Image (cartoon, rainbow, N blue to C red; front, side):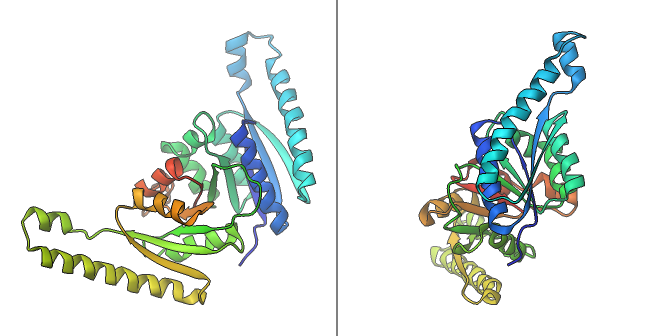
Length: 287
């Protein structure tokens, strides 16, 4: 598995923002990766309009940010990260992170999963499109305090062309932890067949055929990994089925691919990645 080389983590210094820093530090220490911490401050013009032309709030905020960052950097250094740096930018968080990503070229961007801070800005509208398309790298949404390496991974796959990428990215970020590739399927015309009163045995046969086809595709997907990936096919809508798989397996990380034809469409993401980013009971890797 390829190692991570450059990790960018954004924090607003909230508890989950700093949990993202610790997760990023664990990954950087494991792989010997460079780590960049990024924090966004309001633009000086915004502070002037709020506090007056001669305000020194911007200097006070920058000084406070650098002091808090210093404590984080000391903690990160103690975790064994060899190369770590810190940047403060001005403006909206998504723009500051995008600018940092354009110059740092990370393999992975890490954010905390909380409402006020980065999650809303990453996963709503144009912010997500710009960040995820311009950085061209996976985004790890941290929901749990990082105390150790992941012990169980899930790759949520749709059995399409990007499924192997989702598995490979999950292995890169998750390391040596066991990995289950999970596909949640529904029979597309089952509801219509029931509405039109098809015989029950015909409906069951159709659903069974869909399950057999999904299992065959899953076997072909995981075969190249030589038993290192456990393929699972579950019946049901992905939104409830995938979080249930997380709980059943005790997974600390679920990886899911973006969907769409263009880069912008992929950045906006499909309904399943968006749902997991908000509601999965574990960290989420969008790749």
